[in-house]
Length: 235
Ligand SMILES: [Cu+2]
Image (tube, rainbow, N blue to C red):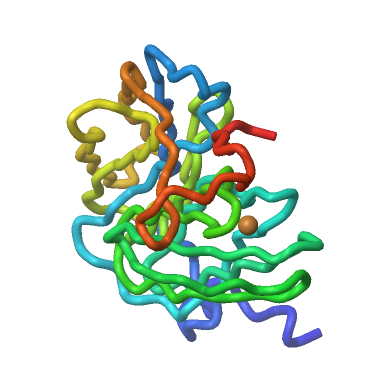
């Protein structure tokens, strides 16, 4: 019973009780007008807070981009720099995953049902991912130098919890946005308010055209490949 009488202040004094540092939640909304024909939801818009001072590098973490039903799930994946992305093949057929975009070049080769391939993403950037034998398959991996990232809800809302005081930049990425560059909003958090609201971020998808992509050799997919339809639509 004696132990139970240890006072709160004594625990603090001995460093046995660590009070959480004050943090704020950050909320906001992305509006897209006009929307592209293929856009039925805003849930594949990436949103992240870039800390102005670089946070320490995390331990590599594994995140999954599933190949199933001849599609990548999710269509847009946001990960922190240093993350290993696994591409498990849950289909009864072979798949591939490759990117020729400058965010990170890779090609995991053709691999059989029930197996996995992994890629370590070491630098920030937007990486468009395709399958070399199924032209309808595409995904986007947004690699960010920040632990604070998410995708918007179906109607464009987002929320970050427990953000410590500091200076940040709010970034968005919408693969169908056609503006010159996607907006970046400076944000200062001093934790004096429990909730910080970011002004609405407005994007436009006017002029978005879905063009078929090339295979990993930079050539058109051979005739007879699956129809090159867009798989960015929510299933
Ligand atoms: Cu495939």
